[in-house]
Image (cartoon, rainbow, N blue to C red):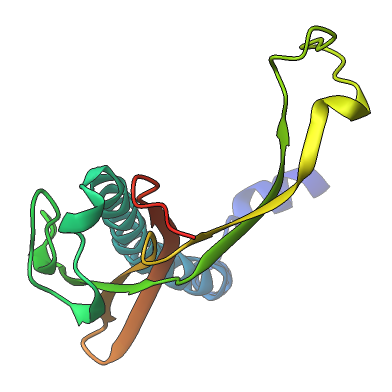
Length: 176
């Protein structure tokens, strides 16, 4: 008899409304996190595209002739195969690519030469007497520090900047 009483009772409207309120209170924060995740993914995609553009520009720059790389700050004029200035991605983001380049002069290198013509010289195990006296080589205007910078705007108001630094050498112009 007791079980028939509970079977006929069923679920009331108040219980359904309470269950819906509990479920809604749990789902609203989850839905808001999902929306933020989508925005974060788009933001990450812009940053990844900027990093790829930065790496590509530096790779192309380092393949250019030493003399073709201009010196100066915030250079945005393209040269050779290097594309600088405003570049629009497939997603519509405008990236500004600039170059800072300066001579590191004089560049000095200290080293000990090796007498490979010695009859006792062993390639795998050179002896102390195979090394010559210390020398210093000074190179003027033969090393450039190059810095590529990529800038773009996040949410139309926040400027974002990433940069990479490398060095390009022209060892055919030895002096000193």
